[in-house]
Amino acid sequence: MRERTARRGGEVPLPSGLRRRETTVQALCRGERRDCFQRQNKIAAGDYHSVFVSEEGRLMTCGTHSFRDNPQPILGHSELDDEDLQVIGGDSVLVVPRPVAGLADVRVRTVATGYAHTLAVSEAGAVYSFGLGQNGELGHGNEADQHTPRVIESLRGVRAVAASGGLEHSLVLSAAGEVYSFGAGDRGQIGHDPHSLFAPSRDWHQPQQEVTERLQLTPRVIDSLQGVRVVAVAAGAYHSLLLSEAQHVYSLGGGGATRRSSSRGRTSRFTGPQWTPQINEALRRVNVVAVSGGLFHSLVLSEQGHVYAFGNGSHGELGNGRDHNSTLYEFTSDGLQQINARIRAQQRALATTDAFGRHGYEGFRHSMTLADEAVPRFIESLGGVRVVGISAGGSMQTGGTGHSLVLSDEGEVYSFGCNGYGELGRNFDNESEELPTSVPHVVETLRGTRVVEIAAGGASSLAATDNGAAYGWGRSECTGLREQEWIL
Image 1 (tube, one colour):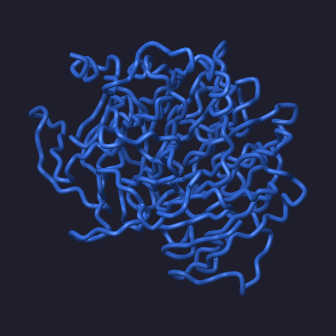
Image 2 (tube, helix red, strand yellow):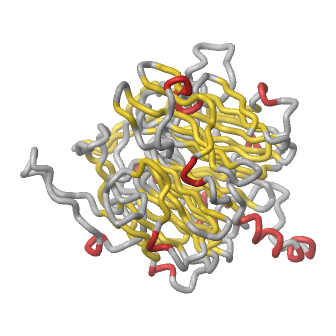
Image 3 (cartoon, helix red, strand yellow):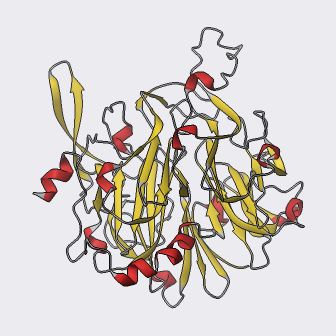
């Protein structure tokens, strides 16, 4: 009965043995959990870079410095010597994390990355940003890139405690529980009325091209959340997740996919987005303590250590054990037609979408492949593991792939999803190691270490241990090597 209810979009089925009534111990620990909501991120991974915060609060970055001979603003360094760089696939890559000089006098509290930008929150509550900014995701009132860290002036007077970066948008959480959003908003991911957003001028090369982009160039409070105290934020590619103090998950953004060109070489246009934050009713009775947004999927962690996943699962990123030989569906003039196809690591599932999002990745009811989940589902294969950390990743640059990382209370890392660049950190005995896997497995190469934090990037992964070491693996443009270890 409970399973059928969930399929209709009702309450999520609770794992066996999960108590509905809060115990006295849980009630006494509620104050301590509030601090856990706003945990400090010391590592973060984008599509082309990795970011670290040392014990002294120094911000350090590594990754892609230039594409061929075209320097990029991604790393936040004003200049780099050639001896610091390594040529990988024709690109210049900084393979060893280097302190960002522009923040030498700033003690960083927590860090976040988007596709190709970084947000750093200082101990004093100031927010600094740098990287690609052509959609206003840096919050400086323009569409310019920023090669070195710059404080977001419009947030002066606001004490920030957390931040999160999406593909082209950013979220900042204040100590008062307010959410400031900025960047691309044409898919509803920043929670503002599209008519109130800035519309860039038409491309003079294509004067007849329809203007669909809507940008918020400076941080702006999400007014529709008035009266809701938010304690955690998570930006996915085109969607956002917000966790309230009442442990309700709000989601916004998304939309059905059509096609359009992009200045970054991607082709995706979303229609029918969710413009204002809505409570995910399926998670209303789950005591949520953490949320994470990936490319087209999301992860949710309960205080009992259970993980729920929803969205696009075509690469196994939901951990639901679905075979890659999935049944796909397509709307045609003759109705809903079934198609059999094999989903490879670099392929995207063939499916149409409705107004609530591609494969329901922001948590509304719509799913077109057997691997997808429109309603959050408990990951059964992790039922015997108490999870304390989650991270959802994915990259448009690799054909729309996604992967997930999970951290247990024993310091072990589990990975699942796409492994096209080795982002799962493990090899396979059958077929190619590049095939995705839909069942969580321990990253064996990290055994013997106690991991305390994880970060899933575009096609790379990071892990930090209790002895100050950081490990990186996956796409070489992010980590320098297939597998990398640093001492911070």
